[in-house]
Image (cartoon, rainbow, N blue to C red; front, side, top):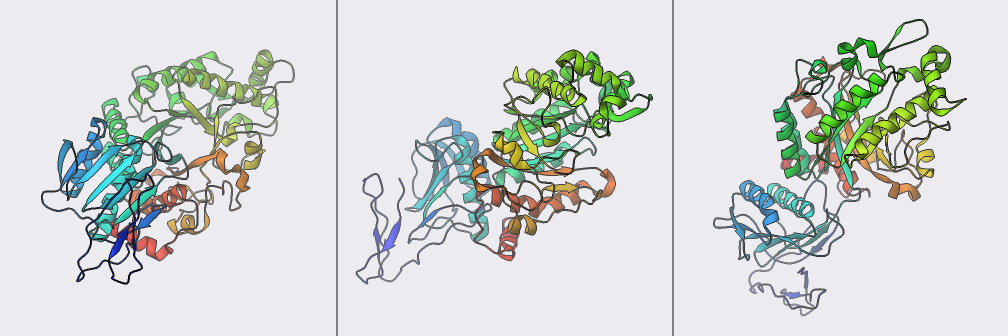
Length: 509
């Protein structure tokens, strides 16, 4: 039930209740003639709520004796978390009384991540069609109490504009402790992110314990027990962990343990980070790892990488790597190219993960124009750059029907040490200039493609790993993460100025 209270026209200063949309009656305490309330303002939170129906009343704030109650046992985790944060008692299932917060699963809403928060009669009711939406409602309540001490009277109806709202962390080039990652998960949860990407294999390191190939694992790494705790904590915040074993490039740590898999050109020179995809053993070891980690990461999404395969950055790949050219023609017929062989590699790895019922993505420079082989139709494009050889505009992917996640390196890449003309992104620039339609550079794609852009992700890359400590990274990404979630939750121009947004972020912690 949602209720909005508006001033009557009798000139008494009292408030008259508006009948709810379902036709039921509802009342709120009528202020005495000596005490009236101004019309409420929207709760203050990051991201901002999309819709608030104002009302007159005292609002709600935590008080002694206040409880959190739920209407469904599936909301127990959300209820206990909120109770601890607000200093309330978790009372389990039951009806709400004055001073309480009730969490409820209820029909209606605008999807699994939508929620309604009604503040009236001295209590709060947060409801949604699924646990995720109710959780996001608790984040709004927590933030508005932290910002102003009181949740304002009225009704919030809220939902995200984009279904994928992510943060990606390169733990391959730089070891991050499990505790630091868990702190980021708590931060991401409060900001209503729903994905954490972990890029854990690259030339510089392989950072998660392995049973199938322990020889590839770096000395500094996360144990599987630590990863399970990370995955469980993320799930409690309705965040899916998106693993990435990048291949067939960026496999230097694997090659260090298996030098026979190193790609070499026609002159015998080693090609950095690249495995020789004409060798079945290269596919075998990658598939072993994919199958092993599918059990460790049970989430819906998987990142296959596929970017920057160095065999494809030379002027004539077929002449430079005749063994790859021969393998391509053997597999796909006369005229097939090294790019076709690389696409076949991507499709084969996708087949492995499809058996684990994953939704998969790959970097945009792993998709090639034309050729004898096309990337599988269900692969989503993780668009990060337009700087690669043969770069294609985002519209080309969208016109073909591809779905896309926005990793625009102009705004969303935090590259340690700022190599290769990268500059640390600022929250202000994201807040004032970027929208999900700005996929490449600074120019948006036509609005008609908005539905194919599933969301976006901020990415921390550790190219020069010693340039910043963990704490410096956390401080550097703080405001960019807040700006990005605002634009993914609601891509319209924000109501607050950047200065006001910064001030609010300071209050929320």
